[in-house]
Image (cartoon, rainbow, N blue to C red; front, side):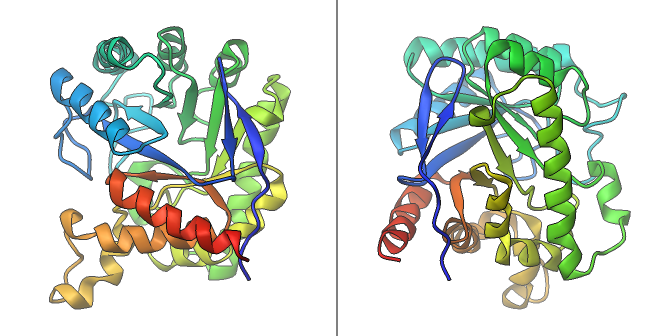
Amino acid sequence: MLSHRTITEWRLRTRSLELAARTLVMAVVNITPDSFSDGGLAFSHEAAVARCLQCLDEGADILDLGAESTRPGSRAGNVDAAVNPEIEQARLLPVLESLFRARPDAVVSIDTYKSATANAALAAGAEIINDVSGFTWDPAMPRVCAEAGAGVILMHTRGRPDEWRTQDRLAPDAVLNMVRDGLSDSLSLAESSGIPPHAVVLDPGYGFGKRFAENYALLAHQCQLLELGHPLLAGLSRKSFLAHTLAPLHNGDPAPVGQRENASLAAMVAAILNGASIVRVHSVRPAVEAARIADAILGES
């Protein structure tokens, strides 16, 4: 049975976005030298701005800019993280300035779990904070978002990136309950800080502390997370669990990052049919086209 999303307004810092009338496409822009997905192709200022403009021209509704890699094994979320707020802001803020000079109406999300970076980026014109920790790694983050009136994406993460490879595997029926409970805790933090419900979108956090088949169990039952009362965002693009599924087609080895696009689209369409109103992607134009097809199916269901 297909999921019926509820049309709603997502209130951001200075505007609103309508969700669920059609799927919105969020484009990933990694301003890092060590991203798992693109190896730093948009690390320089010029390359990052060009990437932003390209994504908008290809149909992206939202740009999601991040300046610290949260790939498996990274030190993200730790007090001695390799990227401190000053470095993160030095990467982000000049790109934001150039982007808004070229496209003043661009809707920008900032992928950060650091309140200082969130505060600076919101002051520079960002509308959304995408916190992969769901407000659990920096206790000041909820207050910063509340005071700015920012749109918020709360993602579920199990542990920190340098712990993921050693975590115990979960039974399939335990994954959804874990994610639901974690997102409920994040929602409580948002509510207690004065963030209004209409500002919050939830992300199950595919690949973030979920191993291989655990992600498929989560995706198959993702629509149940709509019971939490908030729209869903799904970020499945190029994730390693897809690569392992494709291994038999690659002589037993996980598919390289550059050969995960078709699998990414397949997973993305499944996420839309299971309740996602926003999808976070690397390749924008194919995602825009695939989302149109998924939306047409939902429109007839």
